[in-house]
Amino acid sequence: MKLKSVQTNFSYEVLIQKIESLAVNLNWKLKVKKSNYFLFVTNPKLTSGSWGEQITVLIKGSRVYVNSVCDLNKRTSIVSFGRNKKNELAILQNIK
Image (tube, rainbow, N blue to C red; front, side, top):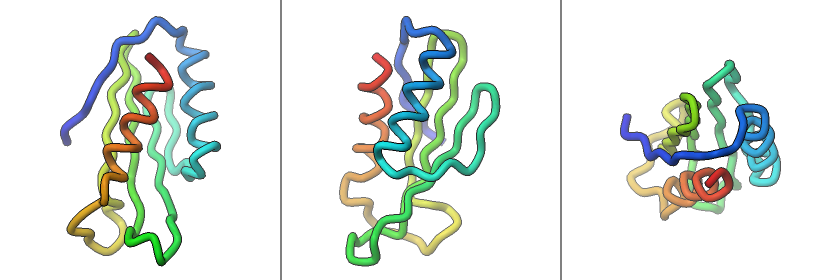
């Protein structure tokens, strides 16, 4: 799994709050939440051209790692139409 990362000066508590708030705003569904690990999925409309994405967020100290891929538990998608990149950037920009 290829992860993008960003260094942040936010406290752990603020990071958690920012990540959870962003997920609510973007209608991501929380599947797994551990102390330093989140797994979200999206459920786009059928007409969107996507089966959904799976977004992984890892927190290690002051560094946050992010990955978004086509949902591994759904039908295979050949292209994401930029959704995965958009998901990753949304998190990285929100916590910089």
